[in-house]
Every structure is written in structure tokens, then in C-alpha cells.
Length: 531
Image 1 (cartoon, helix red, strand yellow):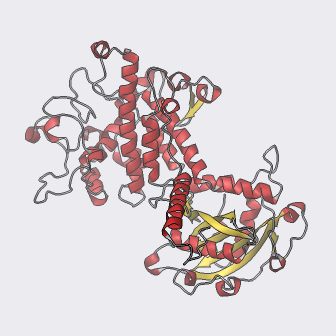
Image 2: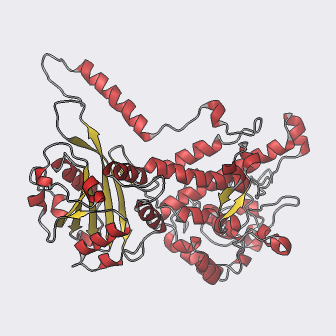
């Protein structure tokens, strides 16, 4: 979707009209000129730093059944009871000190004010600040007290920090989904259908489900294409009274989940600009960093190139074990320093599992080391500790460019950069339907790039339409329980270990607090409305 019309600071209203035209949403437009926040928010304006951010406010128009039918809508100031329509406002924001963008809480507070001011009708607010846009969609809830009129503002969902010139692919994806279907069984041709459709698009829980479906498909696909050190033997199977193929699948699954958890954590801290973007850009890797990489699923005479696993070894293992798990320079307690391993000085791999490996794969090893030291911090946490055991000569992660005889580490490059392909996952998942027989899979980096991530954890009252850090726990919990070697089906079906959604947790906490307060407060002294 083209957002370039928003680049002109004097063209905001016209750009909004073009946007809703692209979204195929009929709007009965109202304003030609802007007004002030104080004038439009007569009863809900607060004279604080957040509200003072507002510059111009445009009452863009109304979307209701009349608009869908090509008729005139009721004027907003004449609506005196619940009305089936959506009011659309455009708000430009002033620049914050040091170029800071408005926070999620600031955008949510302003959005709630609009929804409280116009409590008979749902409100959508489009913000513009600098080169960025944000969409605010506020959930509307019925009051439990029948005597109250209108609806109260609930959770605010924000699609924010959309760059006008170079929007993130995750933002582009959601903007495309906001375009309403105008034909077929899902045709949106009324206010009720539009409201329901947009609520679905802005639903973070549905976004999480879409992401997890793609991720779980990748996980099952990856376990069929990897080899990690220490694979179980026939003797191991006999000792454990288990099938060799089941032990092998468990071994691969454990290692893939560990690798995935590490990479997802890295992806979140990348949002804080603590990991170089070049590590995940195929063009940069091929042009500036690596001598060779095989990003696509090769078959036939070229399939042996897949076993090189250059990306996982040279980039990810060095990032995990030799960068995030090692200080840049020695300090008083930790004498380690980041550098490439030198056999003549440091001995074999096991004694120096914090040093960089795979030097032969880099165009300029020293330049790569300088890049990592200039950006990536030392985290000093167990997640990135190499699990290879020095004294037992036992490989777990296989962080070595001189692997012991008989041991292998194969994590093909196409598992990270491969284009979408169709594969049969039905046997490994244990569900024989078309969804898994013809499952769509693609490289993990390509999956991650197609979603917007946020480092600010969502709350029950405001959330980014993005993937937040709580996702790490969800993925680990779900994938860890995803394979039962005895039944070849998802173990969650047997154990009931489902993740508890945030909304349910919030409800449980609210009800517990209400019950406690009702018992703690003397009803003869206080009259409290808990709703």
C-alpha cells in the first residue's frame, strides 16, 4: 500500500481520504479544515504533556450503513444514543525532544479520550508524527449497569511507528489485511461487518496464532533436515527400551527448540538495535560478510552444498557463543576477550568455547569482529552458554570447526533463507489432513521478517499489533510439548498444557480483586461501584 502521499505535511486530510479509498472503506467525509484538541474533546481533554502533543485534529468522517449504501450519515453532534457507525479522526502530533517517538501509552491515552468523548459511537484515530503513522482501534464494551448510556472504552490496539517511506513488511502485511473484501462470502458491506472485520485484523491473539502456525510448520520441517552431534544409537534405544526413530526425533526436536529459542531472543534484542541488521540480510551476507552461502533448497547434483550449514555455523553460532556469551574486553573478574581461535595459542575447541570459529567462511574476519564488537553487548546469561563439555569430550551444540570423528552438525542455509515450498508434515505431526499434507514452509529469517516485533510487553488495556516478548514463553511451552513419540501426535492434546491467554489471566485477577475488596470494605461505610 502506497503511503507516500502522507509525506506532504500540508496534505494530511487528502492522504487520509486516499488511504480509506485504498482500503475500500466508504466514508461520509465531514471536515475540510483542522480544529484543536481542546475544541473537539470538550469533556475529556486534559492539560498534560500527552494531550499537548496534539497539533491539528481532523474530524475525517463517518462510516455507517448509510455510507455503504451511498447515503448521507447522521451528523455526530445529533447522535444521542448508541449508533451503528465508526467515527474517524486524524491527528497530527508535535515533535518530541531529541526526536523521540510518542509512546504506546501516550497514543492509547489520546485514543481513549476520543472514545470517551464520543461514547455513543466507536472511534478510530489515525496519527501522523514526523515520517510515521499509527492506527488506533479501541474496543467498545457495554456497561454492566443498564442505566448507563453509550459504551465504555476498552482495550486500545495500536499499529504504530509505520514508516511512510519504508514501511516494515509486517506493517505492510497488516495494512493489506485492513483492506476490506468487497465480494464473496466474507464481503463487508455494513457497519457491523466492518467493525467485526477490523477487530479481527487488530487482534493480537490471532496474529500470534498465525505466527505460531508458520513457526510450528517450520519447526517440524526443520527437524527432518538437521543433524546435531550426539545422535542416539541402537544401543541407546535398546537401553531405554525405545524405538531408534523416536529417540532420534526427540534429539533433533530438543536441539531445534534450543536453537529457535536463542534466535527468537536475539530477534527481540535486535529491536533495541543491539544486533547488526546485516546478519539477517541475505544481500549483505553474500556481498560483504561470507565467502559463500547456499540460501535455497538445492536438489539433485547440488544438494551436497546444503550440508555446509555456513549461516548457522559462521553467523549464528559465533553470535550466540562467541559474542553474546563473551565480554568485548577482559575485566577484573572475566579475563576472556572476543577474538578468533588460534590453535597454536589456545589448544583445541573445547578449552576455548567462547572464541570465534569458522574463519575460512568470512571475506574479512577482522572486519566482522569489529562489527560485532561495535554493536553487540555481553549478556552474561545461560541461554547463550555453549553446552559442549570440555572434560567429557562431548559435543552438544557442536561449536567446532574440527568436529570429532563420526560427529556431524548440519543445519542447512535454506532453513533460514529458503523461499516458500510445499512439504508433507502429516507423518511427523500425526495429523492426516490437507493442512499438513500440503504444508507451506519457508526460511525462518523470512518468517521473522514478515512480522513486526515489539520489546514492550502488551497489557490487558493497551497493546501493539505486533509480537511481544511474552511470545518467547508461548513458543517454548508449545513446541516443547509438541511431539509425543509414543502417539506421534501433539502432546498438548494429552496433557492439556495449553497457554493461558492474557485476557483470561486478567479476568481471573480482576474477579479475585473484586471478591477481596468486597470482603475487605465495610459496605455500611462505603458505596463502591466495582464495574
